[in-house]
Image (cartoon, rainbow over all chains, first blue to last red):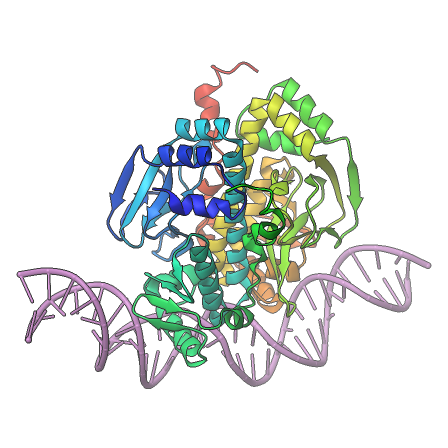
Length: 250
Length: 250
DNA sequence: CGCCTGAATTCACACAGGTGAAATTCGCCC
DNA sequence: GGGCGAATTTCACCTGTGTGAATTCAGGCG
């Protein structure tokens, strides 16, 4: 089931078959299905377990008293929602679905066992946690410094590369099941301006976006326009793979 | 030495004297001094140790190719810069000082020993890590949704409450050793607009700011204006202290 | 196959906040 | 106590993005 998670963690370091089985076990105990636009956890709830997205898109978001809403991050298949969240008393934000979602609830004891018995998983989860933090920092830069065009471009680059990391791209394209309003909630722009920006990106042939399918004919060009530097995703094995492939069986 | 860190961690859960001694030991092995506006670590460096701010202010920041600069977070006395960075190959951002800074470099082995031998410290460091992540998320909301006035107001509330948590406030005031340009780099506003906003906050008597000293005569009023909800700082003991104080010796 | 509803698009106009530069004040060192 | 560089403040003007509302489009369902 958790192929996407396993595939993602492999970007950092190879896992053994044993590790894989342990993850599969942990992710199959309690699987839940949500419809689109439902809350998985609400602000104020006490976190009871870790959610692993198996299928579909979700997001963290926070709503101000007066209704303004900020999407704080996107969860894609293979993403874990806060491996250590139960240290805190209650959630300071909500997690909601964007599309219908299938997810696995992993109980805290289960998480503990997983990391106690599998040092490589522990290490890989650390990597995943730190990359998540790096993404959050990059969003800070995005919202603070980039123009509308750059923000949307940057977000699209990030999503595409993250999806590629879990095997959910086909060539230069992927599914993008978010509305323009949601893109606006994530980038701090109004829906009207998101639309303007998308038109501009289209007319410059940096993206092709029809329905829910996004193609990026020239990723490097889009990266250049959006001032996107991939280093914050810490895809370390890109370099390692060649050096070490002869050392690691399988 | 690390009174501020200890005091901060105590907000979450009480530490034993033994725990305190271990932290003191770890924080006294290698102390370094930096002048104002110096880099402590640069983007691309391989992290070798954890930095603990003993005195002074620092920040994380990221610079775009064209010079735009975003301050991603502030480090105050008692703050640890990424307890687990060394999982990653290299830094994706820089850490620089704002004022002169005295900090302790804690080697990774030292960190490991600390957490291996002191479960309460481990737990408290987890809390600190998760609060740091929550702060980063709140900055995302700040930059994405709040107006200039609200952004600055929110930042001032946060800094004041964090400083209070480490004993660096006096009544309703504290030191604020940052320039208006730096406030702008943190909030995504131009220095001119930061100035306008500060005037406005002053004229509404929400703040008193002279030189490097900030006073907030009515914190609740400022919080209201800035849509500041303190829950993301997870100051859990505020509530616990009363309920549990009779249960926990010392 | 047509309808219904949410999503995307377009329009006209308003304003928060940016820009560049000049003027003033402050903090600090000799 | 005077002078110098940095920080703050002010000014005039400009632009990216927001607002509110109307219009068109698209996809799922009876």
